[in-house]
Image 1 (cartoon, one colour):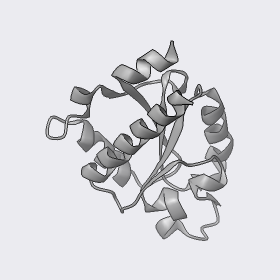
Image 2 (cartoon, one colour):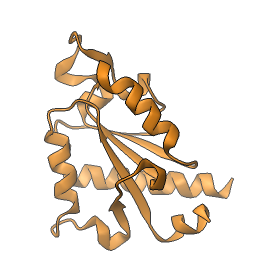
Image 3 (spheres, one colour):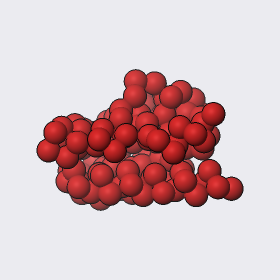
Image 4 (cartoon, one colour):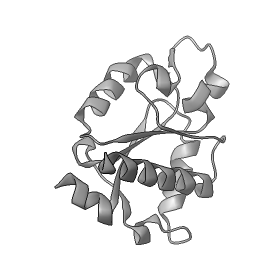
Length: 141
């Protein structure tokens, strides 16, 4: 049943692990009529249990480490994890902060990195397209 859903749409669950919300604003901008991701069948969902893609922003704080692992485990296979923004990719401006456990890829495996502080909606859309292609490849296996 899951494979058929991938032919039509891509469901994305967004997780903020401690960012400044700059990336979150750009994700919302990608959903607005100017970019309109939903016309391609890409939509944000409210539960990781329904998601194909985890879109994670921000460096992972101590409080979010266990929660991110739990969310990752709750997402059904096949799944793709996208790290959006420099903070998620390398901890960015929060480097060596007392409350940071590290970038996202130290906690869960990351498939796609989107750079920028904050990344432009076009870069986020490009990352989602790469996630779609990766899921299609996984489906063929």
